[in-house]
Length: 146
Image 1: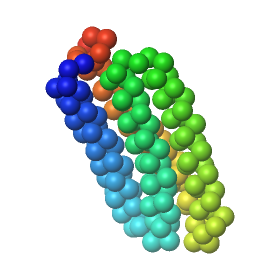
Image 2: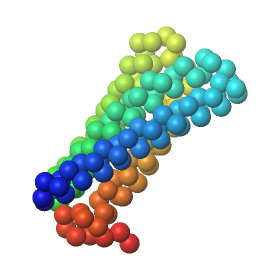
Image 3: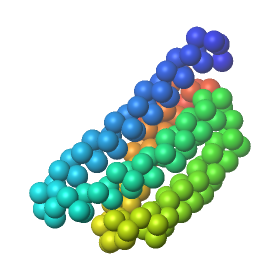
Image 4: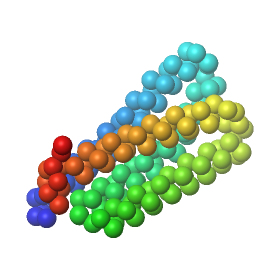
């Protein structure tokens, strides 16, 4: 790839990561307002750590898969896929368990509801953004969007 194409691909990857972060924050804001009205502030409190626990590995996995895909590295893309899945599970489950057992305010079912919501949302958004990035017409193997 030429330096200009590399810069363009990096800029696209950065924009997609910004969309992932923005989408997750938008969900957190809207769902947080709804839950605050419906259940009260105590059930909104666990939403912030749940969002961050799910956003961090999703962002890292999108970056990892995007870099491998833009280089045209099929093996690296597979490693990013499997590694990202393991990273996501370890960070989200480990972090949620730590929050649940170490922070008394999070020792409630609301934490797990938030974790499931953000896990599924970030997984779906990350997957759609990665597919959008890898189906670009200037992808290294010449694929074009259908």
